[in-house]
Amino acid sequence: MWIVPEREIANLMTRDVAFDAVETVFAAMASGEAYNFPVIREAIGHEDALYGFKGGFDRAGLTLGLKAGGYWPNNLARRGLINHQSTVFLFDPDTGMVRAMVGGNLLTALRTAAASSVSIKHLAREDAKVLGIAGAGHQAKYQLSAALEQRSFDKVIGWNYHPEMLPNIEKVAAEAGVPFEVVDLPGMAEADVIITITSAFSPSLMADHVSPGTHVACMGTDTKGKQEVDAALLVKAAVFTDEVAQSISIGEAQHAFGEGLIAESDVAQLGAVINGTHPGRGSADQTTLFDGTGVGLQDLAVAASVVNLAIAQGVAIEVDF
Image (cartoon, rainbow, N blue to C red; front, side, top):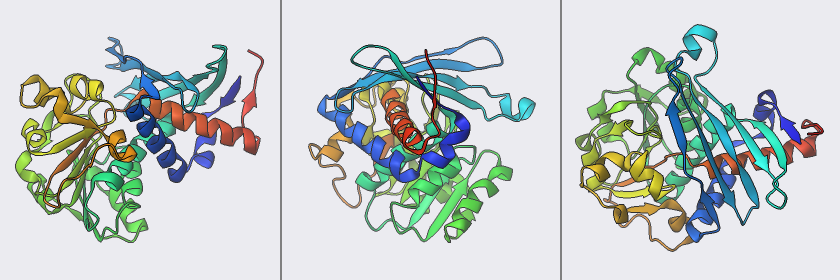
């Protein structure tokens, strides 16, 4: 079994590798070559933690495994650790033997950022100039870095529940040479692309905060009850997702679907756009929305890539298991 410790991930996994892995697995999902297993995600009744498992099998890439982990909201304040904690396990699909154990914390941030970045590539207007981001926590800087590579943005606008955290993303914009401005939520109407990356259980971004033609990537909702945007926004938008079943059950679409505002058939797979079987954006003034629920296959794809890199660079640890 190969072990790739968390400490090695930053020197191995690049945004380009993560982007390619996620884009490829989205396409495989839409073509039926890859599928996710049902998600288990539970409040464990200790430390206010959410813990669970995401897994799947990619026949095209011969990748089988799961990610175990979740969200410990007291970690940062009490222990100086990030709140998201996870580990990825890969298995040989031919024999069932364990192949690798990989640190999943940075990989989760990179694959989540890659997913929204893939959605921007395929759904945002080519002339998008203003990028908005709602959220300034741990994952927001990865989201912003990846998004800035997809269009020639000339301005970033940001909002967060806790404004004192906004310098986290202002620094990323400054390093990219893009001006940054703090706005209130109605100010998001200036944006051509909006990323939401919060852990909220009530909507902040409302339908009237989003202008026609905007692409919205909702990246924070991955649990029943969570909600970042107004359900009415999904009614007026063309909605895409990583996996439809997750989108309407634990993703951002769960609320609009549960209220009968949209049907399951109103949610399309982003992979179909990548494969060319769905036209994607219909017009310059159409609002598009990507519901990034975070599928297990994303984690497996980036973990498989990092294992191969780690072996090639001699930093993977081999153990007899």
